[in-house]
Length: 189
Image (cartoon, rainbow, N blue to C red):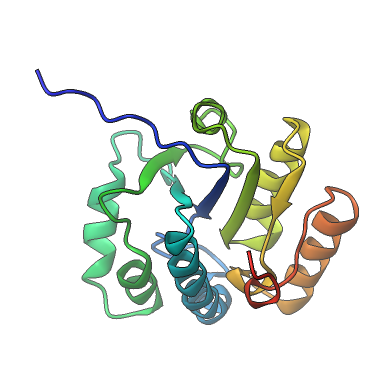
């Protein structure tokens, strides 16, 4: 019998939301380029977090495919020659990263994320991903409702279909959900 790996303890947890994404829905054509820019910023943030010992969790949509497998999706996308493929190649999870599939917009809804974060002893969540005005915002709202008081949504590590949608989402997350929305380069820790 193979021993089970321990859940890593991490006071801060970097959560990538829907970066591993086929971008094949209406409006994706306007999300692809800003999504790639957000992925590049998120990669730099992940590198900084790695040096600080921060755990990384991928929360990805199952796109309605109930037999889906996260690693199969990564493999499928890394072979593509478009923004979705480039994002997948940049941010493919490593062996030490944790992955989970989510059936709806929020990474908390009907997923084991809350249990996982509690076991990790997480105190601060760093939310990055697609789209700022949908899945990232709803995940931030659910984090707020679950009592996570420190939530950072680095503005440069998110994207939306329009600049106005992203701006409105970041404003809502800052004002209503009390998230820190400073860019990843604006915080030293």
